[in-house]
Length: 428
Ligand SMILES: Cc1cc2nc3c(=O)[nH]c(=O)nc-3n(C[C@H](O)[C@H](O)[C@H](O)COP(=O)(O)OP(=O)(O)OC[C@H]3O[C@@H](n4cnc5c(N)ncnc54)[C@H](O)[C@@H]3O)c2cc1C
Image (cartoon, rainbow, N blue to C red; front, side, top):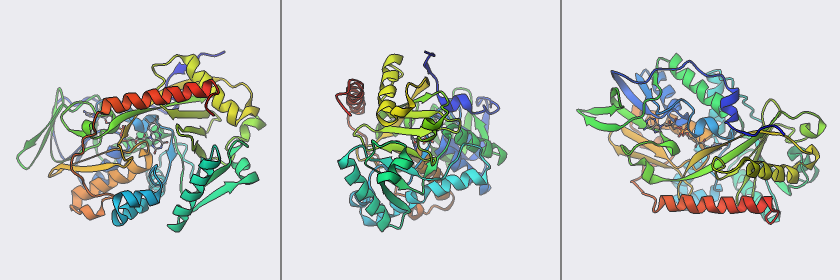
């Protein structure tokens, strides 16, 4: 049996961009963007396109955060169903958010086309798969809710469902034709390349340590340099380092892991998600399932495995694969990796304007490919035009999450028990 190693598939298969230096001097910009994930890079691109001088700082490298290591699902909407979004936020704000995020996959694919990003982009839709009857009822309701809003979604059942999913273990599947899949690291690095082509300056390995008011603008300091800027975008997400912003208090960390097989070939492999959709199921602790362009099978779920032995990860993956795709027989798993997600108690993101000229965001709750793309643009437009009505959500006051460490620990324990139950066939 080959060695199952801890490595992110997307990092492994994506060309490394030319390295940029760390900030080691005093520079000036119209806008300083802090955090080189999808949000910060999209903000930078829109600012540069409007003639702004942009300096982007990242504590590590472009794509180190969630943006480079995620499942690559380009999904519409939030995790919660659109009716619930409107109940929680009120109908005006909720319907604006549903509309913006409903159209967000199209914006991602437009960015990819506009900047000619080679990232295994497929816009054939995604499948939310019902693992049992109550899952099917939930999907039926989600389908009706989105159809009422004019979205191109359809509930697949029977032979058509089996054909699309490649398994008879799914009762129904919600096909959302707005959605699709990408290699998220290639998308993120492609956005980084676009920033540089447009004249933006990127400094990697430059963690921000302080943010101070300086005259009408802001002074952003790293260990060896500083940026004077009129405005600042804080887009450090779940990977926020340091206590110079209060962003870390606004979310609690959760984890998500993935495991990738070696490339699979043959008729049984070709039948798995054969129309090219990515998918996830309706379990309490969901499993995500997708292929990549080289035929690998990628499985994922909530929780972390960077602190667990390889046999546990392999045994979980064997169990899920054996349940959904027994015809594949025994397959070889090649790599696994874990990433960190910024969760909020109500599963909705937050936009902040902590001071005039400074904007920040958190709480994508595991849906940032689309959300980060549109929020990056929206924050840039706000900084340029000052029209908060155009934001996907109004700015809110600081809402510190109580006992974030305890929440993270409780969720992690629950996920581990659930996965152990799946391995032992107590759950499934
Ligand atoms: C394993 C996993 C699977 C997921 N699957 C999906 C999916 O399929 N579809 C989807 O839409 N979303 C998914 N998500 C969520 C999505 O990846 C994130 O919401 C999104 O990438 C966040 O982007 P971002 O730009 O806000 O932040 P990030 O990509 O996390 O980038 C933040 C950056 O800020 C930098 N930074 C932090 N502190 C500092 C500092 N002090 N100074 C300078 N820089 C700093 C970090 O180094 C990092 O590069 C997943 C997330 C994970 C972890």
